[in-house]
Length: 176
Image (cartoon, rainbow, N blue to C red; front, side):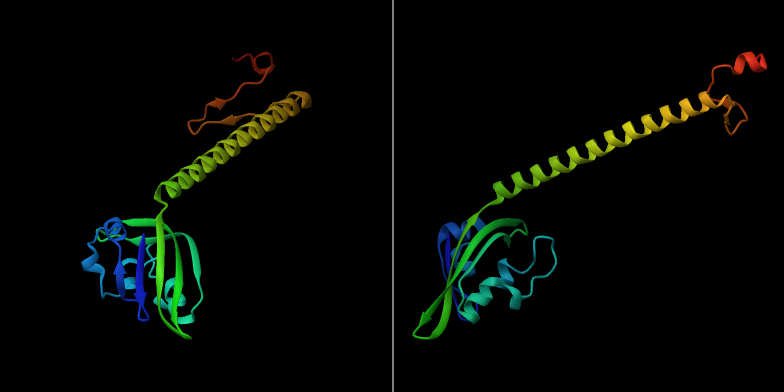
């Protein structure tokens, strides 16, 4: 998908496939500042200042920019994950605009997000399993220590009932 911007960042050419992908007609994009229309916010929704935009830098600094995993915003407000290249266009030594080529990487982005989520879930499960195992080992050590000490240790519920059971308690107290 291809578009061409003038030195001010206004679209001077947009192919129909690019416009359609963004939910516009090419006519709706022509002559308009593209940063304000399609590249105005980062993926997390925070404002994206024009001065930090790689496309703007291609137009103002004359340096080719290759960017992966960025977003353009569709006319309906949805994100469109893209990889793009902004190539400065010069007449002599003067920068007169840029050619922008981009491709939709939304499927790849969703797959990466899903893989990351699965990895996080696996890590959380492993951490929970490790915590359960550590607790079980701790309980085993505590129980062995209490039994080896010959002492009787207990806790009471808020209602005053003894909780837990130790071998030998019944023979000592005559209670079960």
